[in-house]
Image (cartoon, rainbow, N blue to C red):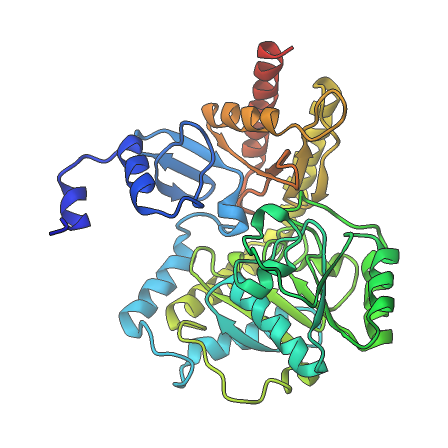
Length: 424
């Protein structure tokens, strides 16, 4: 008879070594983690994570932009706790207030014209739903996605993903085409080659896992115009870039472009699993046959999301993202002048990437990994993105303070110096 997990956990004082043994035995081998010697994270508060030894780390990745309002934020978890004591779960087939208040609030903070929401539990579901709605509305199944994009793990969404490492499908679906991100001519070519087949274009306004890529200044306006000319639905995946990450509530607002459908998740719940796709009135009315989502708009998650949106507004996280983002960008630019084999930082607000390259200017994943380890050893947790996995990525909670940005820049300076000393 198998021993229970609870019994085995209670009989052993767990640490990283024991947890890695459990991981090797019980998780799928595709599940990986950063660091050759990973810390065991046990608690978080604001921008700080703490491991099982009591050591603190400055979190500069936010669980990949999830914890934008900070870890264990009492202004968010207390309303969720109150809701869980009152009504923990029904589903969308029953009438409850939190989901409707959240839909109303999203219609007010999203770009004008986005009116109706469908709630689900993950970003993958939100993007899948957005693509399905576009196909339903246009009666065209063809999708154009972007190179170096990441949209999720469901099969259609996985095929729309432009990063090879995140596509685990051995039998790719037809009807999905990839244009080079930021290349209008390439996008126009695909539309021209499939004039009666393309129903939607899906893109991240600022690419996250693709390496923090920002297109040219008029690219999204031209894409919007192309969609309008050809009756194509424009879908923006704001799952990473949304909710003030770039210094605007949504990244598309930097260019004044409104999509027909927007997918959101991650920072919406600040750690509570919730997602949605939001559409214009005209397109939403195409979704008129019965539909439901078991966990979509769960009352607890909806209460947390409402509190999260209120926190963003009352604490002006957009302004802090701009100010601290400018501070960090200036610090990174200064480091580029003193350390070799780095390109200038790129991104918007507190969504910044620093490409690490070799002496030939090619992606250098080994040095990037070494810098991540050296940062961790100095009490800073960052990320890495890009098709070559060589872009150091900084997306801290938007509540980060000025002195914590200084701490990050100092730690990175020391980390880069240690790599240079060991590998001149």
